[in-house]
Image (spheres, rainbow, N blue to C red):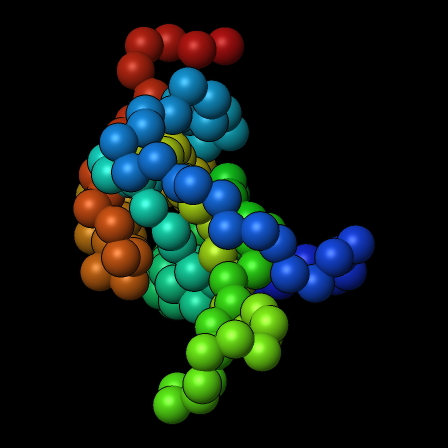
Length: 142
């Protein structure tokens, strides 16, 4: 079941001008795990894409390791039905999305080998609409 907020103050939001050339200044480094998947272009990731990527990782890893999801689809995206006349207000909510900047870390993993993490993230990247790469923690932390 896709992610969506439990309750919101307003059902529909104004369409924000999402910059397609913006680079993330926060959420662009590993915070929890040893490996992560990082998007390298700005854009929207839908709740369905996030859920598909999460299920893919869970299926491949089984019970080994731990996974963190670093983004949440807070933004409702509305759409009018096909072949309707102009006007008549704003359309209904079609899906929920998370608008991310280039460099944002989407998922993190710990407790798995680098080969398992690489394969997991390769499979996850197919589910996302944005280009992504794997990053890993460097140096001795702790």
